[in-house]
Length: 419
Image (cartoon, rainbow, N blue to C red; front, side, top):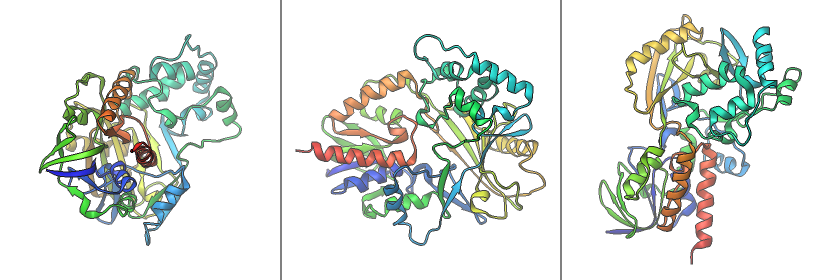
């Protein structure tokens, strides 16, 4: 039985950041045949696509510089985001709630009326839908916020915690909404983002450059854990560890530990992503378009070609689905192309390359029950030297940079606590 000081499960951003931060005697287990997790990049017929659109918005200049220093020869594009909403056949600036003045007059009046007379109930909102109605009133919610987010999360928003999106939700006060009518300011946490010409995998490779290749075990998955003995069974061997760091989806990981838990507290959606390459350019000056209409299959379309400045239209198209849904990819591919034509994104261009992937889980459903169960179980795991981190490991909504920060912070904390 091999002994390792730090055993890391998952060679995505969180796992690789943890390996680099902990150093010493470590192994990284990765069930897939390559590193990257959901940040893998695909190349077809000259097009560069990710599994889904992964764009980087750094709050910590030192982290960005650390990665850039390890990407020599890679051109990194810095882009000012231009995002719109497809609403009733017209384009509205994103976010919707700050741009209701761009709606037809009667709809604007309806939105302003309901916003002004929105009547929060006493006490804090109990769920995400409750929070939306209390903050923005009926019209703004039912025209965009509810249909769009129900398409994204593929669930009733009343299931979700009021703070399910954390800092990523574009909150706006009544004063900010009114001010925006005269002094436009649609800035957000990712208003400026960076993207490497080689795709998101270049940032992953930059992280991996701080990890010894021989310590990354591809095609090896975690099967079971004995928490008391600190022993891990993998698909290939038995390992004894001092500490274990995992970024595997929490609901799957906890099942391997044998700890009693409430499986029903965890739910999520899956997202079908179509990467599509066409023979000619489409519209310019747009990076994202959001689609609240339930008549359209997808909730968002992203334009790689407008990031790269390339001459052929290159899209990623996202469709949110319940976790239990049977996915007919060919049928949804046909519908997606039909819907892209109906909304005017595809006109006479010819599709020449495509790729699809199902991300499962994609967005976890953050609920009051899941928050409580994750907190309880993570505390138990920590007593056994096991730490579950990252967007899926911590069952939360976080950015790629957040995952790097979390891994580094954990390494620092454990060094302080070590005898």
